[in-house]
Length: 451
Image (cartoon, rainbow, N blue to C red; front, side, top):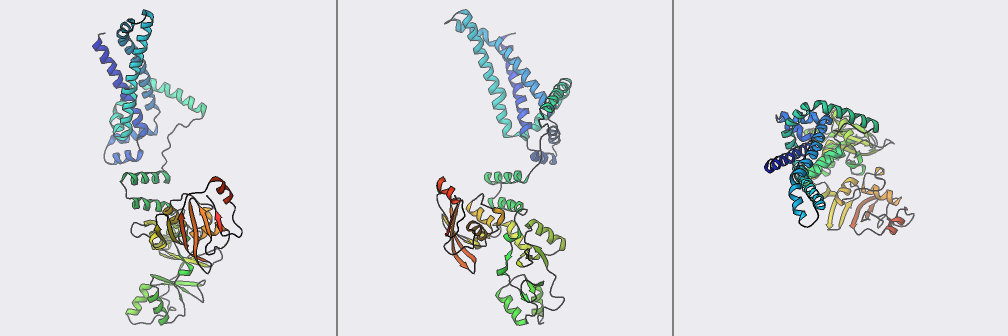
């Protein structure tokens, strides 16, 4: 074999090795979601790639046969091609035996380097960059090789299955897509600029509907504007003018005895028609949906859909009214700051390191604004006020404070046991010794510390 033929054969072996390296990484790195999109766009090759991904054993067997066979052939050809040229060169400085060994080692290192660079590193880097595009291009030749080498592939596949079963190793790829996978994709999309940050937040809020309970979005009891069944016309008109809402609960004696609700548009029609408002009219007061306060927002949406309403009274385990929630409240939670920044009403940033926050602010909103990942006993409260109560183990008083995760939460105003405002200040977390001591809830002191 001439030098030119040997070089051509070596280059051919390197190129064949590059093909198998590209095929291996492309199949392993291809995202099923992207392949499905290509298939829906009419690319039949993507369908074949997805079918191979479901049972990839024979595919990777062909790759390993090719890679190992090419490696052996490359070593034989490279050593026979290059050693005769390196040995005379080393013979100028050393004995004939030593020069032969040095020539063999030099030829081995050069051929190995060619295969590492040309058949492994460079092709795999290209394939990792655009795996789906590469996969649909090489699937045809790979399926052909799988057919040609079917007997050998079958033998190795059976032996591999035997080893996998012997060591109880997983044999199928898990294609299950979880909510964490989707959120990770949206986060990557936001970082790359494909998604706006607020759009990504909306997607996160949708997934939070299964974990956020009603109190995080409802109108609390003390803020409910309601009518008594016997309220006269002038009282109803005055309350509507003072507290304009879309709907109002109608109660017997007090707020804990809700008999229904009335919509503002029905009241406006009566006013425009010059008719007096009497809440005992059967066609005015609608039956109210009553829900427990332990439901998640996703469950609330299901209840709204089942009964065809968008208004519900929320009660606790003692059948006392704790709030009300509407479809608009749930949707505002989902939309977040996309159409209206709800945090502006309840979370006010004073400067770079301090915020003034309303006590009834949902704790998830506080965590998002302050970028706090976890809090203690997160399942025991829904609001910032609840967090402070759990940490202090008592009803907070003015100037009480709690430190956690590099922030100090100081109660600024309390109205009849209700925490109105909390000043949150960012600071450098304390040392480990101080953090260990802070884990104990205080008995009487006003400061509960936790690093």
